[in-house]
Amino acid sequence: MSTVIDLRSDTLTRPTEAMRAAMARADVGDDVYGEDPTVTELQERVAAMFGHEAALFTPTGSMANVLAVASVVRPGEEVLCDSSAHIARAELGAHGAISGITMRTWTGERGQLDLAAIESMYAPDMGPFFVRTAAVSVENTHNFAGGAVLPLDDLRDLRAWADTTSTKVHLDGARLWNAHVATGTPLADYGRIADVLAVCLSKGLGAPIGSLMVGSADAIDEARVRRKRMGGGMRQVGVLAAAGAYALDHHVDRLADDHAHARLLGEALGLDPESVDTNIVVVDRPDATAFVAAAADEGVRIAAVGPRAVRLVTHLDVSRADAERAALVLSRLVDR
Image 1 (cartoon, helix red, strand yellow):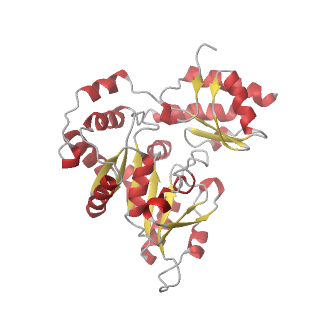
Image 2 (cartoon, one colour; image 1 turned 180 degrees about the horizontal axis):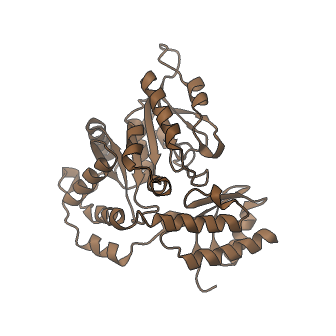
Image 3 (spheres, one colour; image 1 turned 180 degrees about the vertical axis):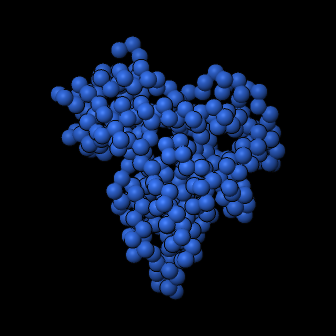
């Protein structure tokens, strides 16, 4: 094959020429001094989208999550989350190693909320003997559950329960834009669910780098200090923020194309296309490593996410023709 179709992740996108032009003309300043106007504008814009007071630009989604969770969970306290949550499985233990917090998990079907399990796990402050539950973290869309969307009503139920227990809610919204496009749910409705959240610009939206933590002004002030302590203070970073702003202007609505391409791939792999919520397909294979290797031999790059699970992710750099060609390759491999 002359062209490789890379479906390993939506982090693989390259800036479009128009995005590169926006980056080149960005007005910049030293952001450690709070003097980069492009960063400031992006932070204010994203905070307003979700109905929160402030936001903080970070280089990675993992850093945004670490900062966000640390703003609501103190050292020695715990956060509850799904057993396959990104913060538990794909951030290299950063929350414990850096922030000194612990986690307990529930297991939900396709990463869904299980409020009954959360209620049974919840541990109030019982004195100097037990770890206190400070927050619950939810992921929308859910990466390792195949881009599953969490229903808004379930999130509202969680919010209502959290209010009765003074528990905070963290929303890992790395791909929240996908949930927004797939369901039509306003971003502000998602914002009302969470005390603090993180969103990513470098996945489906196609920016080369960047995420944001969103929350109260006090939480963001604290996170700015912690970000610097972690080595995340950046200087003339407006060139990167400009890419994120361009992505918000031009690449949100087009996520619907990625969702359609993912349904095509899911069907080729024997799934009900209606079960593919957004741009991620996770499918069981008897030998994930062998299946990934066979696909690569045919010019389609996919990823193993377990010994019996493979993942495919559609994105800005995958056209309809690419998706159709990949679907043919994968359907042949399934039939072998």
